[in-house]
Amino acid sequence: MLRYLVRRVVSLLATLLVASLIVFVVIEVVPGDPASYMLGMNAQPDTVAALRAELGLDQSKPARYISWLTGMLQGDFGQSYTYKTPVADMVQDRLWISLPLSLYALALSVFIAFPAGILAASRRGGVSDTAVMGFTQLGIAVPNFWFALLLVLLFAVKLGWFSAGGFAGWESGVFQAMKSLTLPAIALALPQAAILTRVMRSALLDVLGEDFMRTARAKGLSARQALLRHALRNAMIPVLTIIGLQFSFLIAGAIIIENVFFLPGLGRLIFQSIAQRDLIVVESVVMLLVFAVVMVTFLVDLAYAWVDPRLRHAHR
Image (cartoon, rainbow, N blue to C red):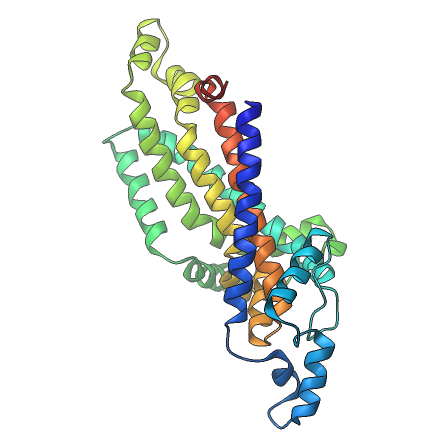
């Protein structure tokens, strides 16, 4: 197990190094000079050159990459070209919105998908199975921003239960803050719950046909007991994979939802920074999201070994 852990850590570090290089190269080829954008089209060339020197944009690309990488390793993400504010402070302020939103949406997704998937698998071919599969097909087909608009029209405009957008702030209390995140979390969770439900159903159906399940039934366990005690745990590996991928998507892919609900999170920060050619912010936030995705994948790999003892014994 220790050897497996060391190999995974080395793989994680190598992935982050390669990802940082790719992110830097991709961002650098984006057209548009930050200094020219900040000063306007009528700025004098010497003024633009002076601002480029002040921002460090006159350095060679390898030097800028090394400086950016070493700064991140020390916790320094640089300073925003537009707001003249440390990027780390901007990320920290917005992380307290994006991270709770992602966790909230993931919890709703799991809360919906687990019972629905178990119900569909235990009633295979029945009315419940057909209904669950129909709703999941609808959830996959409809984009999350369309769900968001429908939720705003129903619960904000018509019923007035929630605000149509914005964030109340944690200083207003946990209840008000979570209330502001409820509609965005539901809009993010519904498509992910549909996918997770189908994976849960498929994984359970594969396990229910195994010999050990028939043995469990022969020893006197009811169908429900055999499913909950034996089938569910053995079906968790593909489910954990999807949960890990979903959390990565939720924390990194909520740009559209955050813009629909005017949430000042990381997604909206990336959108605004791209529009303003604030490259250092884009590079740092994207790299932070890459780190989150890689870490989630790493934790999912560790969860595999915890769920399936065969993996632990194999690595020993």
